Every structure is written in C-alpha cells, then in structure tokens.
Image (cartoon, rainbow, N blue to C red; front, side, top):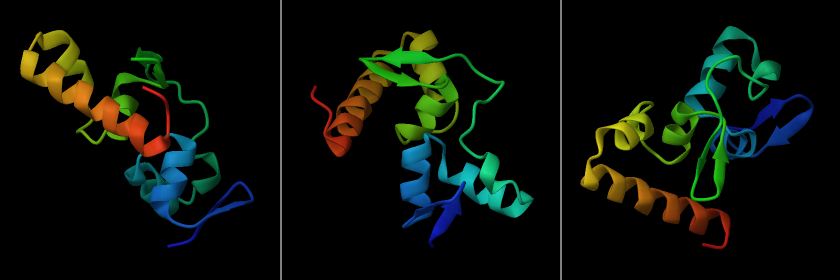
Length: 103
C-alpha cells in the first residue's frame, strides 16, 4: 500500500514506519483517524533512550522498532533477566544489520 505523508510518498506502510521511526500500527491508526500528516512528529510521551549506540524516541518506540511488544525493552532493562537481555542484544544486532549500521 502506497502511503503519502507530508508530501512524501512511501512504497509501503513498512517503509514509512521505518523512515519515520514509528510503528506500522501508528501509520494505520493515523490513516483511520485522518491525521496521517501528524504521524512521526515529536511526541509528548516518552524519553529518548540510547541502546548500543542507537537512539530511540522512547523505550516503547525501541521495543516496536526492534520487533517486540510495546513494553519489552522496559521489562528487559528493569527485570535483570539474562535471557531477556540476550534477546534484546540479538534484536539490536539484527536491527543494525538490516539498516547497514556498523556494529
């Protein structure tokens, strides 16, 4: 599905979400609300987080961009679970590889 946001055309919702740093759900929700030109603009929620050199708008945004549910990053960081941290680290490596970012 081709998506046009603020006079820029994206090949797909997935492409738009990656470029704008939001989830695919955010794109679809904005389309349904009629607020597509506001998607990806600064949000009043969340604090930026840095994970292995990658900056995300919030822990929620990091979770979504890394392929988890909205609360995974917060849980992985606060729980102290070694398994959760391993999953998070693998997702970060995969995210960097997918975007051609040096490890």
